[in-house]
Image (cartoon, rainbow, N blue to C red; front, side, top):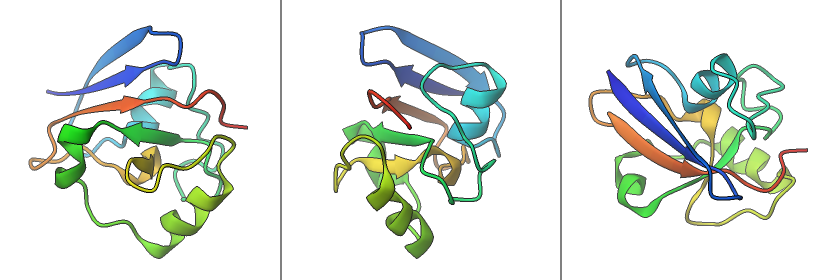
Length: 108
């Protein structure tokens, strides 16, 4: 099992054990994590799964695609050019077995 840690703006933390192949967005929605909406179901078309990836995990992420980059310009909370990613585009893999993300104040 792999681990995703969600850090909420108020200081609360949720930790999920997930199977490889699961996206950060899908794990959050499936387990009822407050702060991730996932309106488009993971198609990189809504930006309601915006997260801020913590520094130690940034290098393990796949390169950002053009669609994700465009959607991050539409987030409800300010984009961080270094840490902002869409949770639907981050999948737990052998190279990325653990990740910690900060949730924005709002998704919509």
